[in-house]
Every structure is written in structure tokens, then in C-alpha cells.
Image (spheres, one colour):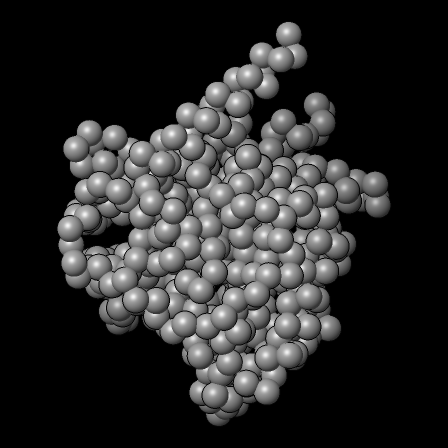
Length: 424
């Protein structure tokens, strides 16, 4: 009887690989578009297409089963109208729409979706969540294989290197580390920082138990100057991707509006996740689900920042803190269930971490009174920048503070499920 599941998995794997080979070429199609709007309005406009030399994603799990993210890309074969690829993601523009600035002005930001390169004409649809967390179609583009305006030239070519390689990118999670604010003379330092990055990442559970499911790449992309922008201090640096502190006027939020440069550099290696390593000792970082991750290299808390931000970008985890100053307002609709796996409004808690809670634990759960209760899973009020109406799984977690230096069981489960999705 034990052979039946194994045979089923083998047949499923063969069938899935056949679907990839019938629909895609083993490289990437990158669609850049512009996202324009204010707090309540947004429009999409086409920018350009690129053929990129690597496909780092799964060749088996082509259809997204999580539906995380504020946006969603769907790819349909035009002839059969069959869904052949989908992924959820979020963006800097979506975060900006929750800031006070978005109430006053309109902005335009570059965004990107990367899909396996279609063999046949394909319809690419972009969807966005409305206030009730329901996806609505916002944009459509039909890719035609004979379109000779698809750019086949790799932008900004840089050499890649790999220092943790477990196998074929099709069945591994490929993380590409790209340097920001490292001068040409500091490329040796970048290589050493990549090694430290890898050591720090695999020091945390559950990544420590899944080393063999990751490939980690580095790109040798030097900047003209060392360091990054710190606008409030009048510091401006000429760097390869234009990252800076004070994104959305939040001092520690370290991001860039130069999406195209990030994608150009990352395209020099296969990737599922982009990780930008910033040459700075000032506390800072950031990450957006399936967009990019950022942390600094030389701060005393660099390792904790790294793993916290990767929780956002890779596994879709929400911030669980609520007592810190942020630039956001009206981030969550308390009458809808958030898509992030580690917070809830109790609207649809059955599909969150209820199965991890002991039978007689009250919901919501009062704050713990003993050290033992600190480690128990419950439903603690406060999370996602909101003090009331949003709940988190444990009193403390890596997604709340760095005090305990561990992920709660709900976050561990979410991370492991994502690892399995990309590596099976």
C-alpha cells in the first residue's frame, strides 16, 4: 500500500513537467508596466517586454495554490483558454496607497511580472484585491510569439557566482543576492557578506532544516560610490539601484523606486527571490511579497533583519507589531480576512492557525502571565500595525520583535509550506 502514493507522485511529477515543456521554454518573459494612481484610483499601462536567459521557478507547481499578495498574475494559453501559470505578489505602489501622501497626489511606479517564457500566444492578466480582499481584473496583455519587439538583450550584464548550490533551479528555491552601495573595490567584501548571509539564514529554523532545498547566487554588480542615500542627512550616493532610507518618510524603511534596475541586475541569475544586500551599518531594511527583500550588511542586528524581511518577501508573512510608528493608515479592512497567513481579523479564522491552538485556549487569548504561556499559540490582539481588531498567533515572534529570536509555529508552518511548494 505504501507504493501507491509514491507512484502517484511520480506520475504527477511527470505530467507536470510535460505541461511545462508543452507550454513554456526554459527562460523568462518579463513584462514591465506602469502603475499610476492615488489612494482610491489606479490605472495600468504597458511598458515593455524582455526575454531573460534564466527561469528559476518551479517546472511542476505552475499554478499558485496560496493566493497570497495584493496582486495576482494569470497566464492563459490563447488557443485553449487554459490557465497555464499564476502567482500572487505585492508591490511598493500598493503600500504607497496606504500612506497619507496618496491622499494628496498621484504617482506612477514601475512594476514587473516575470513568467516562464510561453511557447505559444498567451494572455497575461493582472488582478488586484479590492477593499473586501476580492481579486478584480485590472489589466490584460496578449503576448504574441512573433512579436519582434520583445527585447532579447540582457540588460546590464554582470557575472554571477554560486556559493550554496543544491541542484536544478526547477526544484530548488533560488535566491539571488544583489549588491547595493558596494564599490568596485568592495566586491571582495560583497562575496564575504554573501557567505555570512547564507550562514545567518540557515541558522534559523525552519531554514536550518531545509538547506538542501535552496540555491543561493550572487551578482557582481558594483556601484560608483559606497553606501546608499540617507535623505534626511543630506547623503546621496551614486549606486546601481538607487536604494535609500526614509522610504515613505519612515527612517528605517530602505527601498527603491527604481524597479527596472533591480530587475535588470537580478536577471543575471535564475531566481525565485531577489535579496538586495545594502552596504551600510545603519539599521534598515524592507521586503514585499514576491517583489524584493532588503537588509543591511553591517548592523549588529543584520541577521535578524535578514530573516525577518525574508519572511515577508518569501512566505508572505505580515508584521505582527502594532506599537511602532509607521507611515501607513487603513492598511487592513477589519471586516475582511487578511491574506497573510500569520494575522487574522477572525472573519475566517478557520483557514488560519486554529488547528495549532490547544482545545481550551480562549479566542481571543489574554496576554500571558507566565513564561510558559509566552510560547503558547493563541489569538493575541494587535498586529499588522493595528492595535485593535487584528490578531497574531503568539505573544512574540520574529515577525513582531527580535527578543525571542524565533518564529512562532504558525509562521514556521507558513514558511515550510512555501519551501515545499517551490522545491517539490
